[in-house]
Image 1 (tube, rainbow, N blue to C red):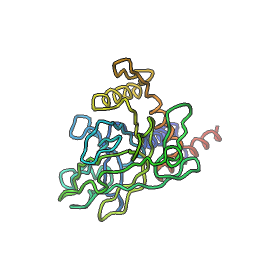
Image 2 (image 1 turned 90 degrees about the vertical axis):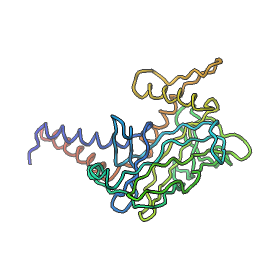
Image 3 (image 1 turned 45 degrees about the vertical axis):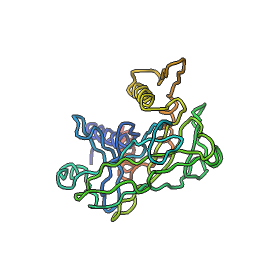
Image 4 (image 1 turned 135 degrees about the vertical axis):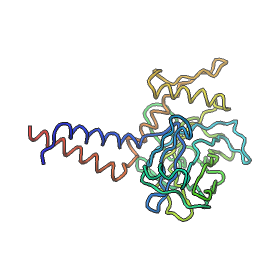
Length: 287
């Protein structure tokens, strides 16, 4: 079969779109769906807003924690974003069909679990990088013994009668006797929904800094990171007042490193990427 240059370009563009759809989602909740009997983790952006969008797969979520959070069980640094969202099996049937997924089971408990994963040959359930120099995530057991990550509570929600869900667990990074160091903390949780197989692990990169003490400081950092992502600013410099400033560009660098070094493409994405490569190779040989 002869492929025209138009067909070749379309294949390559489609492959590139599939790969980019697995990037980090700083401003998105996690969409939970039923994908062939397994919990699928995707993205839910601007829910009920003019730019509402849903994605079936996601690999990395960004989160900024703060020290001034005050849930029932306090920890050193905490936050409740991103949340977890499930589409209504009846009202959102068309959206689910477009995604190629089904609604979550009704009345099902939703839980977060912490997994052990491997970075640069070392295994742990939490990794840490201080944001200085080249990205170098180290197992928490070596970098900061005693520091832990947790969902609070582990069973943080339940679906409604038609599988809908909108819950926000509390993410906690804590040290029992001291304070976790500033930097980036990486974990790879899974999500369980009763009646379905557990999700595959996905990554969550948490930014922790002693200067982020409340919601106002958190919003300043979010705005700076958004400016960096959109290319409107060269860095992510934040002025906290009183002469305290800090550039958080290293955080986006760490997320890009996770995407490039740890994320395994979805099987369909990998197949499309391979197809694009071989089509391009064949075209070059014909020339």
